[in-house]
Image 1 (cartoon, rainbow, N blue to C red):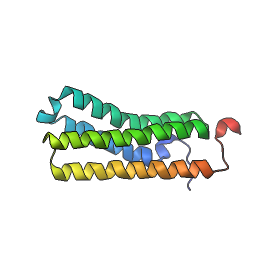
Image 2: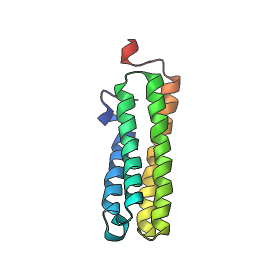
Image 3: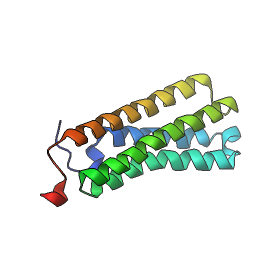
Image 4: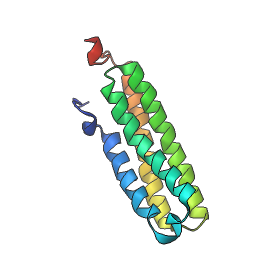
Length: 129
């Protein structure tokens, strides 16, 4: 695995950033944007993914990082669930839904893989060096 020096180097964070950009774009569309509760919730959930990856990384310890990654992974599920609501309310098209859901699933897979790596890693974070 390549050396990660800052959270911006983490592939899951990069993909979560893309997901958040897309969530903001799609939730700005006229019909969707009028559902204030859903817009607020899906935006907050998408922000939670990349924010928790970043915050966990900055804590400089594997155990804390794993907890934050678990929260980020949970937020992936929350975003996916809310995308179903947006689809069911016809705020987004099926193709748009499939495209963003695939990115959210890939983000979740990357987070899960990173979690497995950290659980088996001998490295314990810079604050334990």
